[in-house]
Amino acid sequence: MKLPFTDRQGQRRGALARAGALCLALLLTAGCGKTGTGPASSAPLSQMEKVNGALSPAYPKDDYRTSYEVFVYSFADSDGDGIGDLKGLTDALDYIGDGDPKTSDDLDCSQIWITPVFPSPTYHKYDAADYMDIDPAFGSLSDFDSLISACHERGIRLIMDLAINHTSVDHPWFREAAAYLKALPAGQDPVYEACPYVWYYNFTREPYEGCAALAGTDWYYEARFWEGMPDLNLSTPAVKEELASVMRFWLERGVDGFRLDALTSYYTDNIDGSIDFLTWLVDTVKGIKAEATLVGECWAAQDLYARYYDSGIDSLFDFAFSGADGLIAGVVKGSRKASAFGRALEEEEALYASHNPAFVNAPFYTNHDMARSAGYYAYDDGARTKLSGALNLLMTGNAFIYYGEELGMKGSGKDENKRAPMYWVTKGEEAAGSKEEGIFSERMTAGPPDMDQVEMKFEGFDRQKEDPYSIFHYYRNAILLRNAFPVIARGRTGVVDEMTGDGTCAFLRTAEGLESVLIVINSTEEAQTLSLSGEGAGFENLSGVLTVSEEEVRLEDGQLILPPFGIALLTRKDA
Image (cartoon, rainbow, N blue to C red):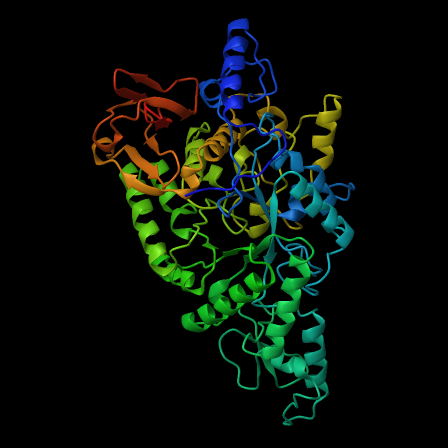
């Protein structure tokens, strides 16, 4: 697999890796604590910084990204009204990815998914009242253009959330249709030429499950989510024309693709109908912008959502691994064997390829509809929260991180609690007077209306950025490994049986034209010693590590010693 590479700011390859290793050694010899790849403090370097710090990230121009989901309302405030906005996100981009691999206070993500920003009566904006504008609470089209430009300057792509199963009742299409039906004499049928918008929705005089009454009439309309979200009739040609115009509007404005909401709801209880519509949508988007990325939400069993790859869509969110009951949490809790992780990777890669050989998986661990993962593990000191994040990021494809997971944020129960303010500043801490800390404090939002008081378990970014053993720096190192070894995202998985068992999982990640890696995971709270055997023999270079504490990974005489919850990445000795 030959990969085209970008020229992100500050990027160096080959010589930079060797020079970085030399500089790192000199810094360690001199006792200096700060390097370009370590925490911005004088704290001693962790093993992750010592080993991973010499790596040189690569940024291929393809769909295999590390993506960051931003719930705009809660992420970063720019004007002090307590509501996150586009200017706030733009100002905070250097946290997500600053385009310079030498810095250490950003995650180095290469794609952002923003939740809906269209005008809408709700805080979450999943019910659009206008698909071609920005909600005033979030800013303006000019602000959006500035965000796109700032992302692209940093080598970051931006994809928008597109919820087209339904609109808001405040959308002009619905308002026109409702007004026409209310004025229609009782018992008289509507006429398309008089009001085509009636056919934009699923109106009926015979109600069925999922319908809401249209006040003042004998009509009902389909609204599967709630009465404020009337479902669109996606079979109406005029609706398709409208949606094609919407997608063209944003793609030509510089958007790099779309996250597609609620694929299974396009046609209720009609999988083939939903896939057919998705096929049209994919073809339409690719016809406008061939390089656009499409990622679909199909919240269903794995064998069902795999079928949606028949549409030709680039990626589908991998629900089987996500959430409190998913495979990642099961392995980290110990209710599932470590071997189950590797076996599931092998099986799903074959499954998805059988539907679309060009599939790009979209692994994720949590999102705005799920309880946050720090609440999954009772009495966790951060070790399990870290390991779960690594398992997500070590999967193939275009991996997604929900904002704040890299800080161990909490939030469960009603939806608002899952969308709490990004934890820029540790609660109760006053800005110490520095410009940087003041900026972090000013970014804090008030959170969604009706949100309960959410008590965070771990510290905010202001403190975690200074701690080399923090959840933030663990995530940053996991992303660094993902960027430094392109095969992690782009390869295929092969479990090494001799090194895999109840508490350990070892697998090769391979792809034609890319350097292979051996990834070995300890999912237990006890150290594990493994011999490099079977297909793992010959992988004797310890090239990357992820550790949850000061206990280090060791490689001695063909024996790999993994500390509790430790992960090692090894390359061939002759590579």
